[in-house]
Length: 483
Image (cartoon, rainbow, N blue to C red; front, side, top):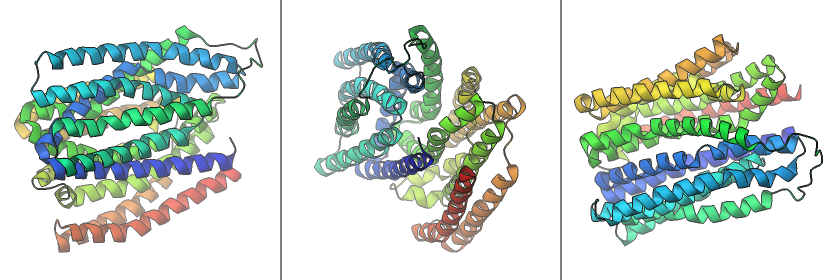
């Protein structure tokens, strides 16, 4: 891919991800206003379980396709692409069908409340569709159609969900209706993903280099299953606190904490974008032991993350009460939890794309160990702190898990892989965008309190400086790439 094409792909991907973050915020806002904290909390819990189950059922086959399809194409064995997909698809589909069937039996025998049982039946269908959708996304990414993948995941899916939620609220909300509005778009987007994957498929599948190594099913599942375990742990880390808050404190608290979770997660989408955009470059540089290029890519990506994410998290920490008030009455009780996690995320994003470096360096076992350690920290602290401190305890547990994962990964890449970024650029970037956001935030909080007006003034003053810094970083990257 040319530099121009790569830049265009990166820009489109970043734009789609940002649009997805805005729409995710809008969906949560609509749900909380239309259904209240209790129904929203129950839906958050159910969708958390389905997210974990979908990741588990996919068994890492989507990431296996992302790794395998480009490798086959690079070895000029396009005749093996279809073989790889046929090997990847059956296990996830069969496992998801079995899990959905089990959930359906539990719902039909009356083991659950009527509304919850109906919601579980709907979610079972979405589980199967979501698993197949993950495979389609893996194909699209493996065929270098990242903008298509990002559009479907971050624009098409949330926009359809938002429309469905608004229709349900207009007609009369209920847990089954909200669940249907959440799940039906998965089936619709799956249809588009299948079409996109078919169109992206290469016209020719001739073995141009028949002597080259072909598809190895054992190797594929060896990699995919290990990555699948890591992905499941990552998903557990995302949702375990929401589930445990619901268990210990009930659906209303789960609704409040779920909103806090969604707001903080908006910033993590920046990190996911950086992984997709910089991953191939880091992989290519490390393959030829070009540590200079690896350090440069890592440094610029980290500086961009700091420039964009520090202002977001400082805003959530300082104006958390005003942000949460947007979701309706009672949600402002989560502002302390939001501040705790947001301040922790300042350190997490400062580590940059450490996860990409571990994966591209072939250290997936290190990453698995890090995630498992973080999960132990999360579960232990949640069980200890939620009964005592409520959702504030959940926030402390989440923060500790995030810092454990990022801290271990950063230590590994610096001490064991020798990857050391330009701290000067990162610190200067953080000082400008973070310092300005902190100054503006303190002034607007002092004069405006926790009002929405103060939040809007804060955003208006903050945005130009952040935009200017991001533009300078983009120009710096372009100049070095063309050198």
